Length: 353
Ligand SMILES: Nc1ncnc2c1ncn2[C@@H]1O[C@H](COP(=O)(O)OP(=O)(O)OP(=O)(O)O)[C@@H](O)[C@H]1O
Image (cartoon, rainbow, N blue to C red; front, side):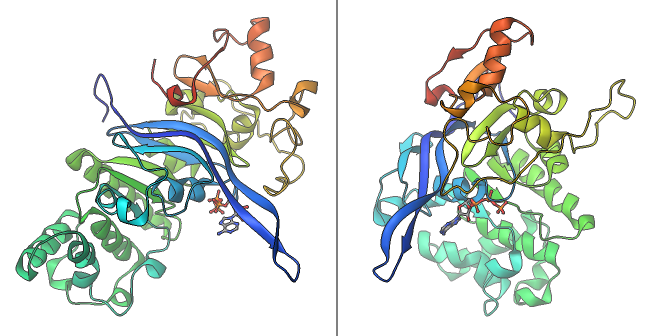
């Protein structure tokens, strides 16, 4: 959990990740899929930041970019104070142990020809000087930590259930004592009955080992359970970044409102029930995003300025950051209560008040 003065472990500033589009016989570069287009946030040490949004909005690309599994198209990523934005593969090598990933599909992410012991021990071969006995001892320790019986160490992934396979993936991610883990839809491929067990395991490990998570998920109820703050993305940009309870009780961005209107109220005795908001139209293509605000083509609150100017992410209430002209206009009129917005520097976004 968070202490009184949390340290920024992950700092993301104006991150851009474009995938080039090549067309024609000559495979000319004719455009870009702007998967991530100017995203800024911080993640504090020991916190879980939830990352949510419709399919294709760029969540996984952000996660992979933070671990430098892609070269960045622009912006900065700092992990534990080190700017990793432009580091080469060789320069990244000593940083890699600090940051790991737990993948959505444990079946696909585990080598079927390797035993559990070999899978979990693989990073130890690459990144440590441990001898075979030292590696074996560490593998058994990791199996204990994730609740896998040691007697399974020589079995193969296909011999396990989905939940157990995800435990193997988590053990492998923990092998090098990382500080930061990107959990990319870690429960999406699991039976509902198993999902809570895996989330509880992630929470226990966070408490014991002081881990920091970026938790990417479609499952808004699970994000409400696990995240301290939540970042809502739309078409490669941040729409809203707020403390979890504030966001779920009172989303400010019109897109966040629509997204969360589908989540059941936490308090069944709440006096007002939230009205379901159905958005019209489809998400535009990230290869050809709308001018101005990315959400302007579907926004129920669209204003003239939204179609020409992209809104900046601003702090509109303590700890709450929203990129929306409508919210700003309402604030200026004093109708929503939050303080008048002040522009903040990208590296201050996500700062707690
Ligand atoms: N390697 C790639 N090459 C080209 N386009 C890509 C690539 N990876 C992702 N994209 C595109 O980038 C956009 C963002 O994809 P991304 O997978 O990050 O979204 P997402 O929010 O994680 O979606 P989902 O929830 O479905 O996993 C999508 O339009 C996707 O088609």
